Image (cartoon, rainbow over all chains, first blue to last red):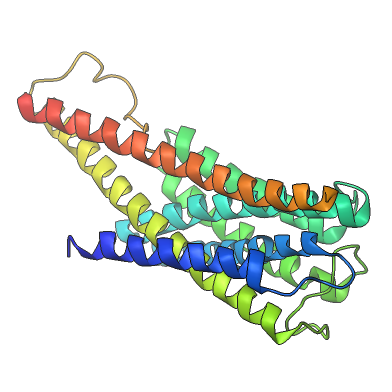
Length: 240
Length: 42
């Protein structure tokens, strides 16, 4: 199994490079926006990946609330953290696209933009709770927060169907149309980002398992009588 | 021409964010490995 991660990493790197080439060179230029529209090849796949990761977080949190399985808890933590990274990309690339196209960085009051920002804040709160809470109930509280936080995902996704917003209508399934060549590049970039997200989640999962092993080893050492000088301090949370 | 700057800014920002996060993961891994080594010595 040791060879699997490096091989997948190489495949993902090639896929990301090829997707970048398709996005910048092969995809046709948009008649109205020009080349700046190519930002959607990073913005939209990042949003879809973030939604998928938050959905995984939702399922893992419910699984943890039902069965208290540590693996479900680790999966919830990992998917939330990587989801926040992708959501950050969405919130950064969106305004960079909006500035030349709309003439403004941000449309205050726009429900798509505001609900996405709220979604990001909810999951940042989730990570802050997990990072700094010393309560024995932290994992259960975080799982409950994640279940309620996930309710914002459909609001973000469907807001452009149900409300008048400045954000463009969806390119797929929302009545809009997209050139098949653009759609191909968009889906290719999403595939590349999915592979990348999978590898990052895998690494973060291994990191969390290692972190829990170190915490356990520290606890065993304390029980064995060789309590280190900082034994009275809360457990080390440096990996979170 | 000006719009191209925004395009490259968005792509660069994306990879800076991912690189920063990957950097924190590497740092955390090395810190935990160090702690495991110290525990092994004890």
